[in-house]
Length: 305
Image (cartoon, rainbow, N blue to C red):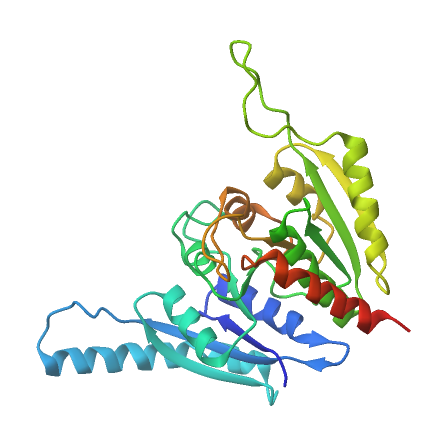
């Protein structure tokens, strides 16, 4: 069974960026993923209007959403693996998440919202609303992604040894294998906490560089069949990850380490990356440690001769 990708489309720069990224991610060495292009029209269940007026209004909104898909149809041409749907939702994010759940999609793709300063998404935008609470991975296309050809040749992944980063690594590894891409493990060593009044802040100290190097080496030893490089960088997570992924074709990160399992809970790092990262960003839902080892083992088995 082919994997399913959902892309949120509007006839805007952000919508075209999202469609281009979805088409890029749908391509793999072993075939294409099925792609559903979705245009969401707003539904307000609490709006009190006359029934006849309400029905006419919804029909007009649905017709407008359907017409906005024409640009996507023209771009996709006669590809048989792409379908199109106009759907009502209490918000664009809610509509996309519902479609993803109904189709069992593995990925939702959105563009960067252009309602804030140039190239940056507003907090609370469609981009971040779609990320927060999603039950599948969400990819964000950077500004200006459309209009040029792309392929996934280098996948960067944020790794710190946590179960969330292990899940992100498993996801990134599958993407790299499916597309014959290289993998870059990025480990950020954040500044040590400050001691106050002779008392050490209880927040854990950053690992020493030698410990980090040993950790990255151990991870590389587990990976077969994919070219792997590592990067260890000092700094704050969002800035350092964006810098190390500047030449990558995709940056994969995990969701934050608390909140419901199987959902994306948008933390500060992934939120900032969704606004500023120069390459496409893919955030995977939170998972348990027990769900990660089998995934890595399955990937290793595929790579084994």
